[in-house]
Amino acid sequence: MGLVDHFRTDRLTARDWTRTDVPAAFAIYGRDEVMRWLGPQPRLAVASLTEMGERIDAMVERATTRPDYGLWPLELRSTGEVVGAVLLQPLPGDDVVELGWHLNPEHWGHGYATEAGRGAVALAFGPRGLDRVVAVVDPDNYRSLAVCKRLGMTHLGQTSEYFGLTLELFELLRPQPGQ
Image (cartoon, rainbow, N blue to C red):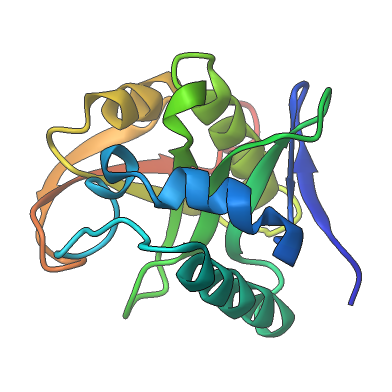
């Protein structure tokens, strides 16, 4: 299976992971300031390049069984540098599709999360044929809460349905014709 570009924006390409991405992925997921917001407790940073490689291998394997969904690296089109990742995948134990973004802190504040979110929304409502995507965000993650608002997502309140945590739930519905 060849490398897939899932979508492109003005500055970013969301594509499949490769083993050469392990150091860039570790620069994201090996950071406490990133991992403190992601997934269930305990929210621990990836401990080593070896562990990150194992996680990349698992994502590559999942891409063969569910190519329409995943967590994909965000590569700067101008330099090829991986600055973060974007996800479009069903939430655990549910068929609701989550939209999310994980950025290397060195690249926070440049609009990449919002740009990647818009690209993922276009993919979701276009080629993937979805009618709805959601985001679940830690109540204290002000950066991601702001991205949800910039994407035009509707805040539905708090939910304890996912990851065993109380999270803010946002949704975005496919625009209806004429809207």
